[in-house]
Length: 236
Ligand SMILES: Cc1cc2nc3c(=O)[nH]c(=O)nc-3n(C[C@H](O)[C@H](O)[C@H](O)COP(=O)(O)O)c2cc1C
Image (cartoon, rainbow, N blue to C red; front, top):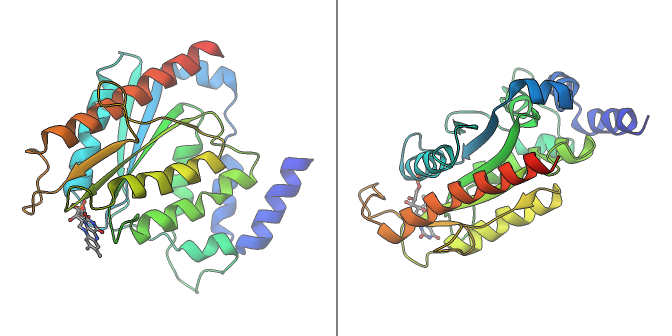
């Protein structure tokens, strides 16, 4: 079977038994299981290496807006801070003996059909995403190789920088490009702001609360992801 072939191919490339557990469970729930769940889940993946800081705060705002869109919507914030996600595994570099890999557990969660939307949040580092975000995105190759598990999930992105025009939109576009490669349905922040996604500014004291424009884009993004995820659910 094609999926078995790609699964075997991935495992050869990944060279890791740990990933096998995730592969086996990713995307295995069928439509009936999904219907039984009833709720529609939107997951926010926060890719700052600093736990609970500005990117996490922006993501929480975004997810709260998603949840307030409909009682059907459930949310979950996942912070990658402190997790070990070796990016090289995606290119076939085996784990070192004893090296920790937290990606398979994360993959299992994201691949669940009940997850209808994924919002990625990253700090802006030199006009682009954090290395943690890139490692996460590279590891998501497993979904593409496993018959496009993320296909038709709705994707949105927010970025937090220390400067207004510090590269938030460039960063957002980079992540959106990766989502397109997964056959996800990508959206920006909904109206009235309606641009590329969430674009926020850290005030220099690790707060975003005074950024009226940026926090509005985060909320509009969450609402838009939820609205489109609901549309997709009803169209099935
Ligand atoms: C290595 C590094 C590079 C950065 N580069 C940029 C940048 O290009 N543009 C910008 O606006 N902010 C930049 N910043 C600032 C962070 O994006 C900003 O402080 C952000 O709020 C950090 O997110 P966090 O609070 O979730 O960790 C950089 C910070 C670091 C550590």
